[in-house]
Length: 639
Image (tube, rainbow, N blue to C red; front, side, top):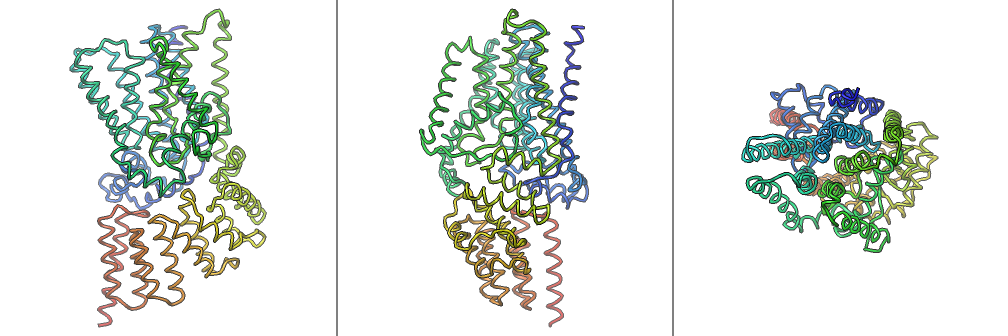
């Protein structure tokens, strides 16, 4: 019986089964939020094969991050036939990756527990419990069931693979240090590159490995060859990565000015509080904080709010505690440093959003292992009777499993999911927007309820995006209290960085107005509003707003003014779609020579540019080529 309980194959099978059962109810849920913008081009893939130009373009032309994330996009491209009608197919692959990651957590934990204590039964208990505690966290639902988070799942899977390879090579029998160093280098390079081209948090791998080397693996005899390897392959990249932001400080400051409503210092101060909130979700799992979006007040100084100082002091105190006699406290030192390593990229100086739970996906593992190991290895046998000793982790795992399964089921019911997220964090504007969007699908009464949600949250958050959604509802439902024009213009003038990216809702309102479906707002007011929004926007958004203004002028017969604005729109946005529209207008006006000039510019732009925001390069070139042939035909006919 003991041998059966210690059977690692049985443990792995149970971990995969339990993980699958808990997340399975959510597979039949909808695509959400960024799924469309990132995956819409899948419709142009005619054959899921490397020989297909559309397949290769989708994989190699990604814009989700600096690397393009081709490994992640490759896995999506293989499923092109399932887009957009079969979300479950995409989410099943996400779940498979998560389950395989849980297996790697198990294997790493088993190796490390065996190294620390050398008792196979104890190592099996620690590894299986740690893997299940990590895999069944309710907060992982927003990573597993949000389709595009496959990028984070894949990157962390390869990081775990690299970590397991490192642990196995350091603890396994290899003939020589030279051979071991070569294999360690191969493992680090291969898994690191695969992780990097899945998502850009891959540099954390060297920090994870350094933490392992100087905590749990510090007592392994290390010869000169391995010390040199550690210096060249771990310490040198780590130092370069830590100093790299200094070389791009001007660029970072520009990013903060253009895309955020806080400074770099304010972000770093805020992260001290954010990291405690992340940890609290692990230690006290609930079903409330499992949504995708979370707005958190910015720390404007060390004492504003006071929780900032308390959070920083608590982290310093915790570090001092684990650094005091590190040999005695090395498992806790491992947990703390591992947690910090996991957040070095996304919770440090980059101008990213302040809070996302998926950033904890791998960072949680250190504390999970430390807590589980301490429970099984250090808890005195006299403190709990054997049955209670087993019952406590079992009951905890059942709690995690039931919460995760319940939340997963909610993902298949968008209205109730949105309501849960909104009730948990009503001051988060995107939660309010998602909830309002779901309510608005239920007729006039639903639209009025949605308007109430938008109005309430917009008042408390100063979110202009919510006001634009409220304007849209007011266009289509006379019972909705429309935001006043003076209020809208005043808020547009005071627009903050975090309220940018407003192009899509503005375009929707303009479309409704031009179709005669928005009697509340007139054309000249919308022009005035868009001009003010353009003045407060970054280059791309400014260009898109100028494009909308050009359409107003074109509708009034001001062709010259419309063309001048479209030229400005193209200069700011770099979007070849603007040139396409200009060419269409010129064709309609009979100015074929100039239309041909704009078509040729658009073809050159699409051929060389990576700014393909919708569709594929091939489909755009086909459309432009067909248009060019039509223009040449018109010209031949008029001659």
